[in-house]
Length: 194
Image 1 (cartoon, helix red, strand yellow):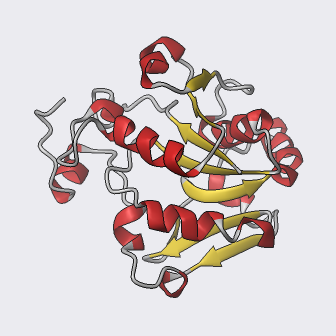
Image 2 (cartoon, one colour):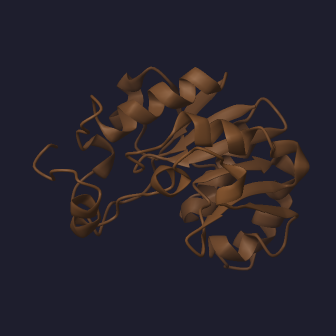
């Protein structure tokens, strides 16, 4: 299985590139994410439109195949560039991504087109395994002007994982992402560490 880190967001709500916020675990959020993804998946890469920003992290960086399609386009690029049938997709703004939780989801990849945590009443598409079978559905959605990522899951074979599928693991923490300065406070991260 291929590992893909999506780093294409504009960080509009944060006002600066959240990927490079320093964590208490050592290094920035994206550096930590790269270490985790590389330790589990081979090959692994980053999807980002500004390839120069992420070029020094030790992974190949691929631009979006479909420009301006947001996270949906990032997933498409991850699958397009994947050397295997499945890609595990995560984001560059998840400071507590847990290797055990990643493996637990990735291990179920062959069971559906998408294997995705459903935690706290929400789907978490940036902590999920996708099959290349999703690509044609994504293409259809983009052509129709529908970039709502949650609409994808009603159009493909989706397996929702609950807390019970992550025994002994803090999946709620692993899927947590930071989009605003309030999110940083909630996550216990000092926004000055950037």
